[in-house]
Image 1 (tube, one colour):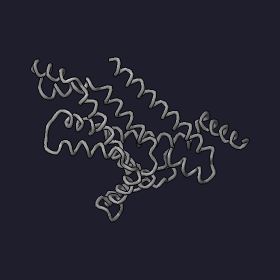
Image 2 (cartoon, helix red, strand yellow):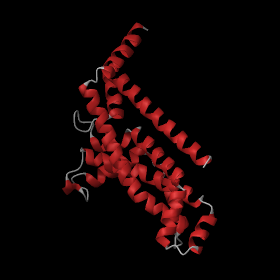
Image 3 (cartoon, rainbow, N blue to C red):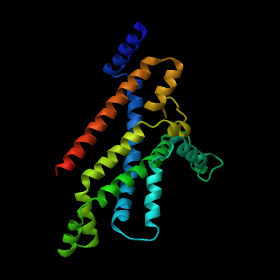
Image 4 (cartoon, rainbow, N blue to C red):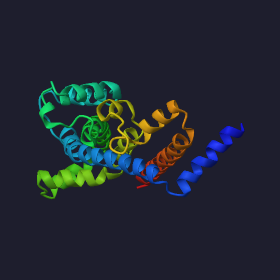
Length: 232
């Protein structure tokens, strides 16, 4: 019990003193996940608008495929990206394997279907009267789309935050494609796994505490957004 207490004390000391290694790992985690989220959101929201507002062949298939990909096993994504970026793979010439860029690619693939599916649900949930009223007032298709997206903004924000929570807690894919290289591709989740195996519980506990606080903050923001959307 004393060793556990001592481990927590040392872990909080690392956090309070702003340990350099700890901050570097946290910053890299936020950077990789943040970039992946921006990319998946920039592509996912327009696609979800198309799926929600347009009619085209195989639309139902695309929606079903996107919903299925929400549950993609991270290790499968990591394996796929590894094969694509390996020296013998089609993108091996880019030299991205075991770099933060490879981690961004893997996390983008994981976040993308979550953004698309949840944003699509928010868009199709908008009252049809709003679209009809916009058409009656002579709005262009683009203006109608923007109006509907604005109306669904709370649901869209919830989808984006949910995707961020998913990629922040991910370990399998980025471990495969990033290699967990100290000072270069080592993020919070992979460091926790490594340091626990090594018996260095202080750093693992410190990162675990930070990750829990980030997860709590994400869930609080998500709850507030959903609550605000319900009373809108």
